[in-house]
Image (cartoon, rainbow, N blue to C red):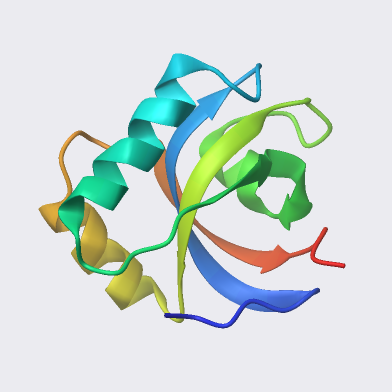
Length: 101
């Protein structure tokens, strides 16, 4: 599992995005990953905390959105997860993680 740091690089896989922190889509995405039983840990928070994610996913950078995501060390690992995961994901983004402090 990738050790995230404030301002550090990561590849985010965005499983769900919503306007409410407790939206059913976010809760369902967390439960889906937990059910995989592979040791994946989802992150949840504001999409804007991942610099580069809003733009890569087609959102305005300062839009107030919440997300459930997984982080990987490189794009190939992120893509392997996406290729095996059902249902489809919102997208993948090469990001810098903030809001970690």
